[in-house]
Image (cartoon, rainbow, N blue to C red; front, side, top):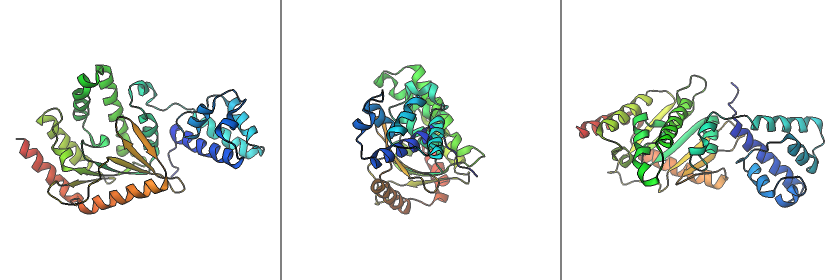
Length: 287
């Protein structure tokens, strides 16, 4: 089955290829952009996949500068360029999304598998709608956000869950939750019980595995929450880190480091079969 390839993924592929061509020609970004009608800062953002290159004419100028004369090579790159400019479904919400999240969501949509460690709150793709809304509402007076911001971000989070429930090649998801993330009450006990039920239901999907790392276990715990996105063979994995904004890297040493961290916690966590029982106990403690 053909792999999914959204606009964000295409921008990333195009950026890597343009960087390879520039380095092959021993040009700096400043030298490559000189006289082409756009800045070196813009070209830098294109190479990292953060932005597209809107005009076909600009793309053709770059290919000329890089000495790409083969007809098939040019057409392949121009096709990739056209595909990178298509609109993503979340574009209407981009103005209310945290910095970097729109790029991450695009990569998330094209992932084959995802692994995540969460120590503070429930992982986004496992969140119930009531939990997600309460989470945004809690921060509303502090961050001075609007009701529109809360509703739009809640909607985006719920629509993102489609990647694990879709019939056509759902993402294989494995999440390790620290017990503290499950115990931290968001909203009220009713919302937390709904959240536990949502996780239990998602665990019944063949492509979803959730493990709990109990507080009573003296085992390794990563200090940073992270997400590892794996793609089809030949495409580099990406690690996503979320703080006040979302950043990601495909640097092999970083991907290797977070793989090691995830594997260490996976070994220390309760078996996946214990998760429903653990959630039931937590719900019972809420009364």
